[in-house]
Image 1 (spheres, one colour):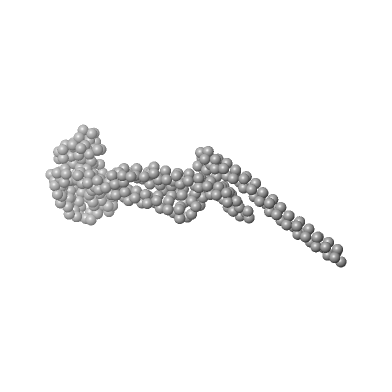
Image 2: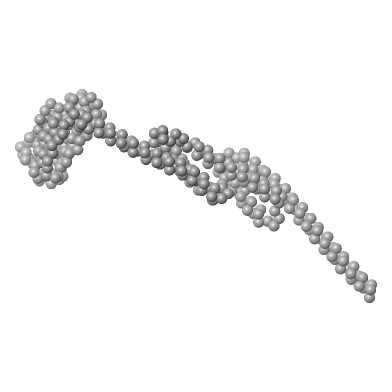
Length: 315
């Protein structure tokens, strides 16, 4: 009986010893495997970082960073994770992300106009604004890969958008100044600056210091005048042409609507305008142009529609 008990005890102890040996042996094997995998992973990460640094194509660099992040996510799902591998993943990813952050910053620097208020080239602002607009789109597209957090991405976008807003405000100011300059130039070319005196105008009568126009009573409220100063085409800076455009709506019983120009040269007719043969001369420096559509004036005093058209006479 004692012998049988002893055998049983010995058997149980042997089994326990065997189990303990197997357990520790398995753990040692697992540890060894983890060390092998970790060593391989560290080597792979070193090679991946080197490949990234050697790569010149930006798109390829972006794909390498994206692949590294994917590998990190897969590795973190393992039961056994080596802290050295985790640190190396973080280091590699930081190196790669730093490249893109520097790329963003370089674009901002290249398109930063430091002397904002003293720069008057609107095209310069528009060009740099367009490049910064493109940068915000790039950041938005790449942010899930090139930034660790959404907050970091928004901070960089806000930096770019602040510059864009400043440029937009400056463009608005410059546009307003340009408009004011053109208005002033136009004003300088107005009647006040060329010595034209005040005009008199009623519903059927127009009169300035050069000529008088009378229109039929049926045209009341249906005709208009506009005036331009020409110093480039038919006039010159020293011999400007004051061009009056007369037009009317189309209820003339004979001809419908029409228009006609009157050209006045206060300082005489320049040589380049002398070749115009369609004009009818009135006075010394007044010329009536050919009518558009059914015209406006009866400048040639035609008898068969004398009462249906406007009359013009020089002073």
